Image 1 (cartoon, helix red, strand yellow):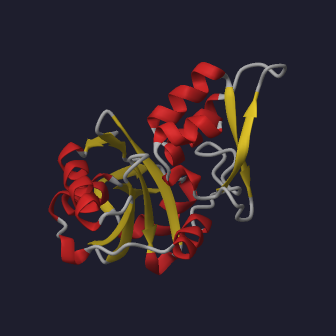
Image 2 (cartoon, one colour; image 1 turned 45 degrees about the vertical axis):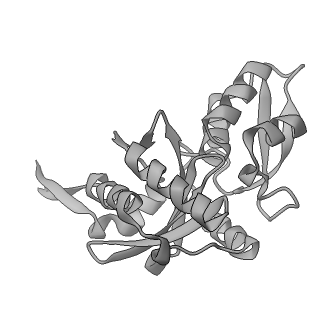
Length: 213
């Protein structure tokens, strides 16, 4: 599932312009979950973190929609704080089924309504720390999930086509425009377990990144 965040993007873009920055952070709370969202203007991507659980994940906007999915290990960590949508009966009794929909509705509402005095501009050091929290062991979500830091680009001239899972990660970090460029030109993103001198280049404007690829 995905949620429409068009109005939220417009508000966050306006706040970035008023702050003269490409990156802002704001907080949210849902069912006792205290979290934060970092919005990257140039890539239209989001880094969502849950403070009390020290976990996070990345999400991108595609045609003004954001996916409501998150890594399996993150879901398991915060599941009990998510909304219960039904009770599923089984031979052994049953279980409560939780949904991320309410969480993302809360995040979307904050995107639309957050005010200038509620946002902060994170430092590069803080951003690097936040990226480190987006590690995941969920291979279905991200095969390179334990390598959250961008390292370099690789052309696949003699190695077949760029893999879909790699394009998906490129989109989550760099946004849809860079994913499209990599798809057209058969380029893979390469990732690292530790920070690199290019860890934050996704903050640059699309045209500047394309020149470097």
